[in-house]
Image (cartoon, rainbow, N blue to C red; front, side, top):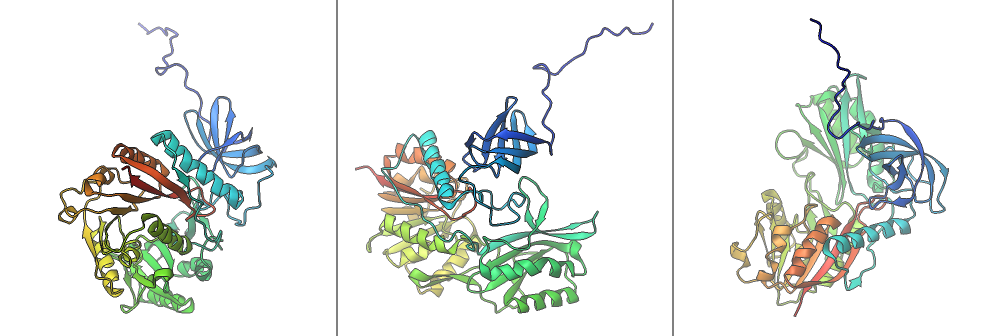
Length: 451
């Protein structure tokens, strides 16, 4: 007997599913306020829209980049009613390139946005405000970036090489002819790079390209297969024309084609030369980096008879200037190759009162042999995930003063909770504008042990 249709229709638990907003859809909306990441916030049909490239008070047309639940991510396509604060973006790729997200804001508004972000995180997560707010540390608004990573991808469908920066909220590659935030020395290389790479015989084997400008200019090419002799000749000639070192990264670590090539950067106020290899971590803004070091030394105020601890030391960016002042510096890093390079940097600069150690800085340090004597002053510059395990033991080291350099206000605020629990007070804090034209916030905080 045929089965009768009961007429029932089953739905997912929770009732009728709301249709998602399709990618690419355009929507006119009013921007009511700004998010901490520099995107404008608007509301339509019960959904919250985060719109890149917009400002509070504007009426815009936004194109959907993606949606999940009641949240829609979009970018500004047209501005019907502009904010009085809006300025023309200096870069023609603004809005498509994922690098600079707040070029529509004047510099003062960018700094105010970053200051609000830091203050909100400290207040909301740690329930604290510093006793003193420091003025923002700033440098040049443009032509500041001395290191850049260029995306390279062979498009099998279009049979062409794509070279440029990643698009906002996408893996697409935006072709870039010029970049206003790149230092001037790298601009000609950036402009000529796509044509040169496209002329190579095996573009399918090309990975990313890294550009660096310091004591010399350098071009690093990542490749996934051996390069033909004629391609090496093209790459070599390109670097000769642009007065740049050629580095190749196949298997193992990056290597210079000329084994005698020396690469690094100068810390002028301290007359220090730090060797650097492509792939190492380095602060991309040389001007703000020097100002940051100077402020950290001033806030930490190490005395000539003191022993100082530098955590997440990298190449010795803070440790070597500290060693010029303090009796002894103990510097700790999680990557063995960085420890070796930092040690060589100290030796090359004639500094023998600094020792470098490798340690897992996601774990407490109280069992390490070099902590026994203690440290009255500590500096730490952790990655984005912060230093929760490390800060939990700092009071046991006898630290009276602590300078915390942060690239993530949320983890700085989280770690501040632990430091306050140990009896430290937040004496001073301020932003470091390491990345103008972006909403990325770097900060510095000074903690002092309560008496």
